[in-house]
Length: 155
Image (tube, rainbow, N blue to C red; front, side, top):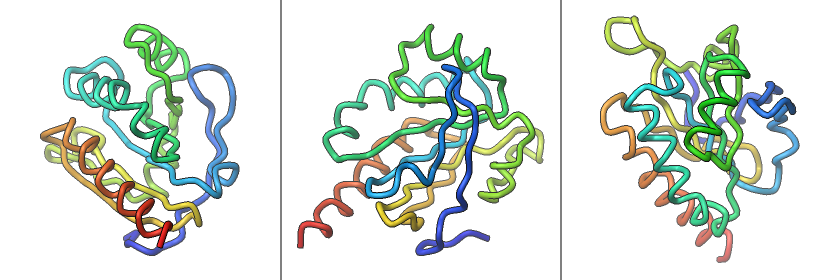
């Protein structure tokens, strides 16, 4: 089980815009990596739009925001366009990244789980939030953690 302080598993995955996202390329800045069950479902849409609506706050904190589900690149592209999402959505169609990050299934194992990781500028896991309910809580809790990272880095 991944723990706080562990090195975040490195990965490369395709985005809905046709590029490839490499975690290693993000070193030097914190990364918010949020796993969600499915594009265009009510909870996942609320979560994505909450990240969108507060995206400037994440940029101000120097963070990169990335969403991950098992949906296809085409699905991600439609979802991102429909809701004007300014951050990449990664297509983990095989579920490999979900397994690497040990994201549990929810609701009797029927749905992929909703877990958010904050990875610090050195690539270590600084925060893990696992909750299927309260999808938008992931956004506010993540911002609190990022503020702490920024304040601690300035000391």
